[in-house]
Each structure stands twice: as C-alpha cells, then as structure tokens.
Image 1 (cartoon, one colour):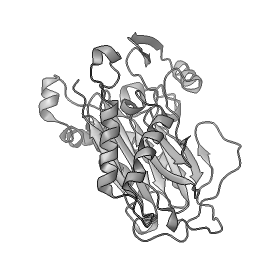
Image 2 (cartoon, helix red, strand yellow; image 1 turned 135 degrees about the vertical axis):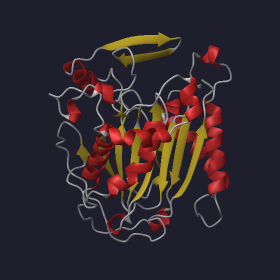
Image 3 (cartoon, one colour; image 1 turned 45 degrees about the vertical axis):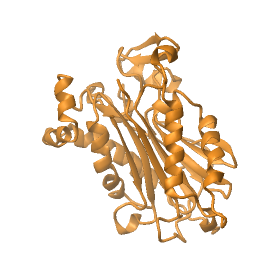
Image 4 (cartoon, helix red, strand yellow; image 1 turned 90 degrees about the vertical axis):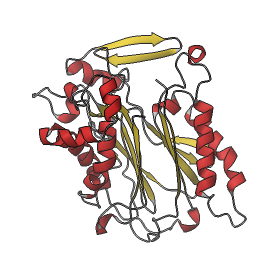
Length: 343
C-alpha cells in the first residue's frame, strides 16, 4: 500500500481553525513521499495566510518539493517507508524516483477549495449529480503535453489489454506530482514549467444547499468506475444509514459503504480485466450536514477562483469566512477506506 490520506476537522493554528482538510496522496515508486506529505502538508498549508487559501495551497505543494530536495531530510523520508519492502525491491527510497499525487479539499462553512496535482480525483454530489472538483493530470492532455515537450520530455503510448497509458520518457504515467525530482532538474525552468510539476490546479466551489457529499479517491477507483457511477453507488446506500431526524449517517455506516465501494472495484481475475481493479485503492467520503450551512453575505478570502499556470478570466466567487460551526465547522461525517493491491 503506497497511498496516504488526510482527514482533519481543523488545520493547526488559530487562523485556520475554521478550515477542515481532506486529501488523498497516491504514491508511486514507494510510499515514502505520500507519507511525507501526510506528515508535513497540513502544517505547511497552515503556515500561509488563511485569507488566501488557494495561494497557501500552491505554496504548500511547492514546499513539499523544496523539503524533499534537502539531503538532510533523506533519513526522515526513508524512515516513513516499509524497510522490509524496500529491501525486497532492492532499492533505497529517494525523492528522485519516488513521488505521489495529491488531491486536497479545504472546506469552510461556505466553500470547498480544491488543490489537485496528479490523477487522483475529487467529485461532489450535488442533488444526485456528479460535479467534478478536479481535473486528472495525464501526459496526453493538451495542456500537459505542451509543457512536457517544451521541457524536453517525450510521451509514449502503451497498451496492456484494455488499459491504454501515456508515459513520460516511457516511465511516469501522470504529468504532475510531488517528488519525482529526477524530472524537475532543468535549471532554466521555473517549478511550474518543469517536465513534471508539483504546481496544483486550485478551484473554489461555493457550497450550495443541494450539496450532499464529496468523494476523493485515487486512480485505482476511477480506472474502474466513472464519477457518476461512484456518486450513484454511495448515494443509493446512504438512505439506509439515515436517521429519522435527518442527521448525517453514522461513521460506521459510511465506513461500510466505502468498503463496499472498494470491494466493487477489486478485480476477481486480473487476467480477465486487463489489470483493472488490481491497483492500490484509497477513498474518502465527506457528508455535509447542511442544516448548519450559513447564508451570509460573502467576504473575499482568496484572490482568484482558479490558480494555475494560465490566468483565468472568469468571475471570481466569494468565500464566506464567518459563522463557523465549532465542531469541525460543518458537522461533516468522514469515512475512509483502503485496499492494498496484491501486486
């Protein structure tokens, strides 16, 4: 299992107590960088200004790479991995060839701020419909391809049965990640211009009364089920966990649903599914208690609705920072589930 996850009712620091944090980090080449982000990403986000959550998220993602470049961090990084597994694989963990995705959602009383780097994905259920909160970063996407080729990389297509993948320099099958420093060594390029970049896309989604829950999961889930399929699967099972007073379902009920979701994704025979359903799988569901959703005049807390390499000219949504519910801001019920692949 090379995945890690985050589920914090509030970020550290007085200025960040109104912000909950949820995220999935899908590791590759080892679990070490994913575990490193699980350990350091929350405090790095909270070291930035709480009135600019989007900017703080971008800075924190870049800070993970800065920390990983420090040779003095190498013993700590290696201590986060499975030593027996590393020995069996004949490798010593190094951030040059170990990395992870990071799909992170900050939740305030009135907004969801999403930062995504890689091919893990966040999806919102709004009145039964799947609303994408992030975009998968694959090498064949036009925007990603342009950056990769400009930085001197190549993109190769490979097929394994029904599974088609595009790989940078014949190896990495995603175009953004934390770690993987071997792809980020061009001294003439800025971090966001490197062949592989840790710069996340950041988007702000004002919360609505019709928002029911959101899911963050790694590609082991999304390779098998579509976004709407996952939303339907969870939503169809939520009524069985509802209470008479319409309070959110219990954590035990949610955990059972998420375990069933992963069981549904696991392949009964990898030879018949072309390898699909055999990856590590991690998924988090966060259910909203919209009885506590405050309807107030909005105050701006972020400079833009979308943070990326290119500027976005769309109207900038406002984010409300007042009227936070003390117990974790919104009464979110959280459940996580993990499945370790056998490969």
